[in-house]
Image 1 (cartoon, rainbow, N blue to C red):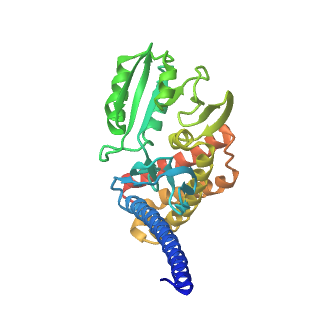
Image 2 (cartoon, rainbow, N blue to C red):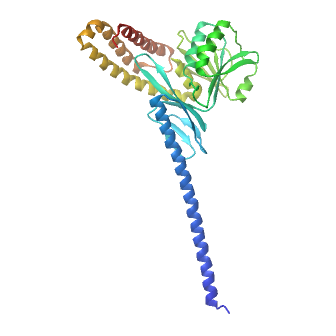
Image 3 (cartoon, rainbow, N blue to C red):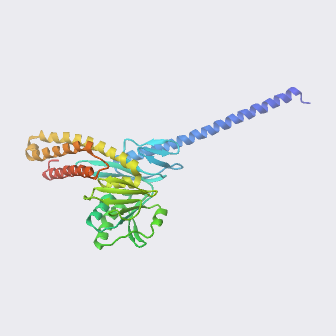
Length: 350
């Protein structure tokens, strides 16, 4: 016969066993959470390394954030499931998703290149040029070149043209679009018009870019200015319009892919790096002036180049992102440095 004391010991044993079991389960759950968090952090570490490698080498790749994703991007921070991920100091264009092509692109002004990363999920772009003027085709070319080249990646950015009624042409990657499709479309003198199936593009998540004098209704409308590279982008959101000045095709791409926040951030990065590049290039050019033979052959042009760089540097504080005339003046200073640098290359001075 079991005594009261023995029954008491059994009850106490069961209580202690249950307590230990609860502790073990809680510890196990916490351990699993720690393990999952560690795995998520590991994904972000790998992503940062991939971005840095692509920026350094220029070799494109794909990246998949398995069981994770980028929820949003407010440069320079990516918001993921577990953390805000800082991509500084690298200039990067990205958006929400879990599978990306990671490519390097560049804005080239001859004596300096502004490199930036484009990390995009599957992306579909449709241009609708509502005029066949030379300027429109130039804008189309100058904008397309700043979308990523995904010929060597599995995740694609594809570009198309429209429309004739409900017909449009789509499915080309950037290089073929630039080298084949734009020239052939221009030579065929196709007259494009607003698509009758705009709802289809919205439903299928296309980025539709209209090039016109302000006519045409869509989320993104490029309104050319006097210069091929200067004008405004009209963005429509919830029935309201907002206008952004562009000074090159890269500005347009930033607005289309990342909106105002990315446009503002990337322009700050561009100006910051440009200022450093001007200082370095000015110092390098002074070394040529110290070489007697080079100075004899190149002295005048080098002096002109240094003067042009100085004008460009002085124009930076006066650049007003909301003024077309300010953007045009800044663009002219850049073009002047490009022109003189080409002359220096022809003379064999650089």
